[in-house]
Length: 229
Image 1 (cartoon, rainbow, N blue to C red):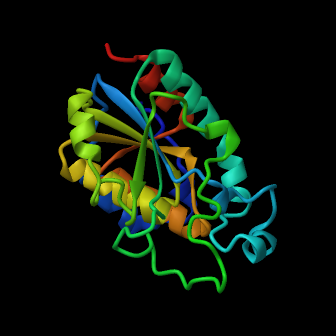
Image 2 (cartoon, one colour; image 1 turned 180 degrees about the horizontal axis):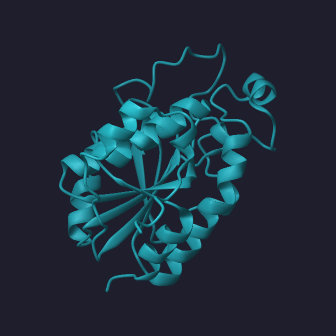
């Protein structure tokens, strides 16, 4: 008897055509030299406390509402596992330094009187430690206009484990560019989040077909726990 297929968050939004298309793709197993990349885990998207999106977005226009808080324990677990295994740990944030060209990461309407740098501080449980790389970016992908690929080559990384936000934006753009640069890519299902549940689910589904292994947290922890074997 064939084993039951693993269940994912997108199962309730895809149809027969999507399931048929999925059979034409093959899995991409992770390699042996992983790094962990946490994408844009800053206060702008979490806010100061758990709130439904409709409330949170009034105070923090970039907020993902409760989705970020649901993902936070999974992000903490990945970070702890990566550190314990001694794999490279990297963090991205927006580049709001004066004089940096390129505009914002997205085309969201500006908030009158808002400081571009406000809210870009990392949330406390995910704050980088000394020795962990911080990638400052001005576009969605962590690879665009940054030395990230060079740093990963220098670190002898062959697999990038990606988590953070938003699934349909910076996570997706980073995962596609990582794949294009020749890395094996793992996107962690419960440790990514978005303002839109539909965008989250369909982005993960599409990434799982074409560019990445979308793994549950428990499996991703195993990938990181294997360290540099």
